Structure formats: structure tokens, C-alpha cells
Length: 276
Image 1 (cartoon, one colour):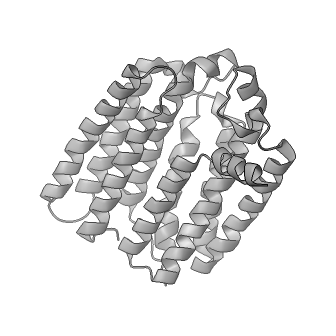
Image 2 (cartoon, one colour; image 1 turned 90 degrees about the vertical axis):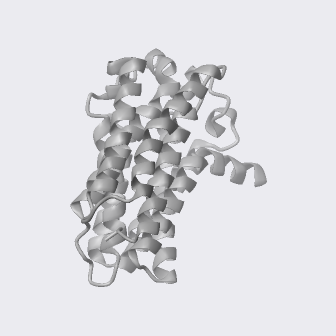
């Protein structure tokens, strides 16, 4: 039982799941949610992240086995496919039910983000529009957080746009370590068509555009903290990609750099009091 639980945790892609859940909780706190509201947002986002992570490993099980991925619990036998499939269903059903605590509009937005992410796992991952689900799902996250407030206020366009740009950048950074393995198993998403150099440039440009939208989108002049965040959006990805090139084998440094930029951006929003 303990092996299965650990396997489920590992199959959920715990790093991005935890990071996105923390980001959502911070956004909820900055937007003015009560403690109960923050908890409801965090649980909804966590359930969605679990469903997406488990679905990814379930769908990719044969591909991961073909390229010898020993870091995947399904390929090592720590978790069986039927167990993972049941876990996906439970988490996917729980997402809209938990989101209903914020009202029907918030629940619809959370469901849109989940469905978009699941469609990436199959069939959009291997298409030229593979970046689209990332943009939609990331853009839906702050929209859900704001809509879950009392009265369901409209989310600011600049906030949704910044999140969508961040998600698009995350897609290119996330795929970089797997380009070679994906090519061997027939995956041809947009990053694969652009290649490593093109994907790095796309990720860097999108991350910078996201931060610029967060800094210059709200009314009023940008703060020094905001301008510092723009500088970080340039420096952190560069350091992450340098670390990835220096590391032997598959490296998640580029994607971790995206998570760092995301957390910097959210902290900037929360401390500036300009989430909504």
C-alpha cells in the first residue's frame, strides 16, 4: 500500500502540481478570499493538477516504457494502469464539485481549465497547436480565482493574458528535456517543430511578455519591484537553461525556472495589492 501511495504521488508530477496549487492559493489570498475561500481554491486546483498529472502518465505509459523511463511509476510497476485510471476519474470528478463552492461561473472556468489540459494529454500534444491547451488552462486559473469571489467579479483581462502567456512559455520549457525521446515515439508538437533553439527563444519571449503584462497591465505606474520582476524574467530562465545544458542527461532546470518566474510574479501581485 505504501509503495502504491508513493507511486501515485510521483505519477502526479508533484513539483508542478504543488507549485501551481501554491500559486493559486497566493492569488486567492491576494484577491481577498477568506481562509475558507483560499482552501476551496487550493483544493480545487490540487484536484485538477492530480487529474492532469495522472492522466499524462496513464496515456504515456507505452511511450515511457518504449524509451526506458525508469522514473515513471507505471513503467516500474509501482502503480498499475487500472489504479491510475481510477485515480484520474476521482480527481477529475472532484474538480468541478470542489469549484462549486465559488459558484457556477467559477466551477465552469475550473472545468474549462481541466478539460483543456486533458485534451493536451490526448490528442493535442502531437499537433501544431499543442501550446493552445497550456494557454487556455493557465489563463483559466486566475479567472477561476477571481470568479470564485463573492459576486463573481469579472477577472481583469491583463491578468488572464499574463497567465496565458506564462502557460504558453511553460509548455516550451517543459518539453525541452524530452525532445529526443518524443521524437523516437512520434510526438510532434509545436516545440518539436521549432526545435531546441526555437523553443528556448519562444519560452523566454513568452515569459518576459507575461511579466510585462503583470507589471504594466494594472492601472498606475509600475513599481520598482515590478521592474525588478521584469529583470528576473530575463535572468532566471537564462540561468535555468544554462544549468540544463551543464547537467548530464534529462534536466528539468528550464521548467523549474518557469516555476520560479511564476512564483515571483504572483508574489509581486500579492504584495502590490493589484490582483483585482
